[in-house]
Image (cartoon, rainbow, N blue to C red; front, top):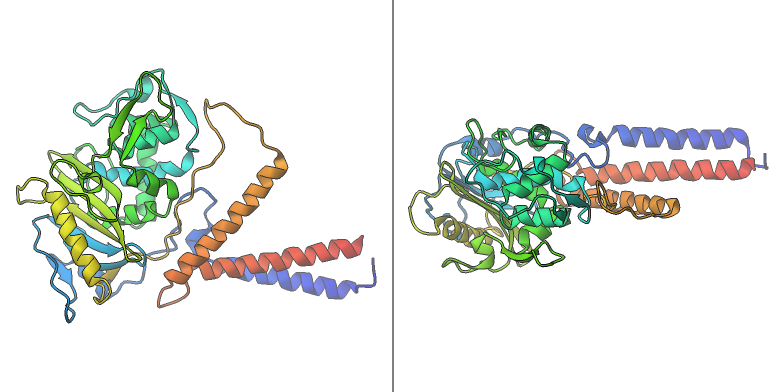
Length: 417
């Protein structure tokens, strides 16, 4: 050994290990999940009078000088939320359990989208397309054709295609496994009003969600770049690579594309619309203006007017952007939900394999891990709770302690040499 004294090195190493242990054990309990498990939830926010307001019937909003009351819309349930900080600006019957129609596909996407790389190629089988409910929306997937995962997600988001949902569910291990995965994700996100019986939102006894839960799903989904990209795509070629059998598809969200007598909403970034005979019209819409992103969820307008779900969402968005700078929230969404992980970039299933050197893979993993720490820290900084720091603070403590430990071990090894 060199001139360095062994007791000093041992003491330094022990201290660093202790620091790492303390920092890691201080992490929120739910943050101990393995990478790729999906959004992490460290527990429900403390019960407060403000949060309890969303359990009350009727419109919930805090009055403020020079801020108008929310518009009088006919939807059975609605909610206006600041997607950046989780402030619920106003709501009506936010926890009312209602059929969600295709807006439930937001939960499907939050659950399944991170599992497959977008360039993964899948050959559709007869089994993939079996058991699609009659009358379901379809994008037009063909048996024995090869589609990328990105093609399938465009089919989900733009055309609300149940054939795309069934194909992705088959890739995920089957319909029942996917339902179980969606239920588990809803539980992790604190979506207490959601019971999942189908992955595509088709009317089924016992299936319901709420404006609150659908807002949670959309807010979580928008932290993922692929979710955000698909949710905001207006038109696409299906499949994207073209060919003699390709055709164009357009997003059915009229507030996004401007169709059927609906003017497009400025700054709209998706997310998902739906309709069934039991659910009526449903819509989760996100829009960005002046550095702020708002989420509006509207469930089953009763006015009978044409395009009511879109026009009521428009009026709620307009009100929200005007009110957001001055109004106090009626509640806060759980603010310890981590960003939805991105899908793996490696081809999977029956896609052509490509070789990547082990050193390159290791470098990518290190970069990905560092980026995850930085994202978590940013989330904690932006969404720290009154009773403590957000998760990013703990991640930085843990990361720093691990770096100290690693540095000490490296020094030790060098001196031993």
